[in-house]
Length: 171
Image 1 (cartoon, one colour):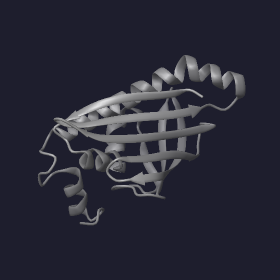
Image 2 (image 1 turned 30 degrees about the vertical axis):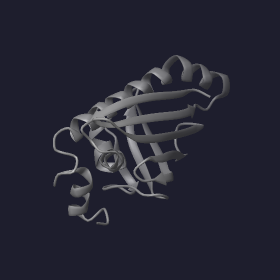
Image 3 (image 1 turned 180 degrees about the vertical axis):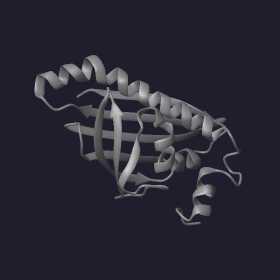
Image 4 (image 1 turned 90 degrees about the horizontal axis):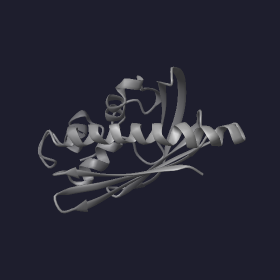
């Protein structure tokens, strides 16, 4: 099964802030604005939790896609997993890992996927989707790093503090 593994160092950000921002539906939509991703069902704003689902509409390769994913594992602030429950893939599982390191947080994405359509799908996975999905994840992580670098991670505008202010995270 094809997969993408991407490591991103987020300087000056805590694992807790990286974890929270990575679970934010609003941050995901903003980081994927080029493909017009928007949440249309399930959790449509704020931070997701274990068992939550979100349905996304997006345009990739000029084609409109609808995908519903669920948070199937949740160990704050170290790891969570989102998996497709309905959508274009035969299988989609995305593991997010967060490790505190000197000067910041190491974020690791491991996405395993497979397309439908048997042999044709496997060819598309290898020739097109591995590169495309790596690019999408890299762009998203660059957005997260830039966003987290805008204010001190433990300051009043950290992602967790902002979510608390909006009432989407328990204090």
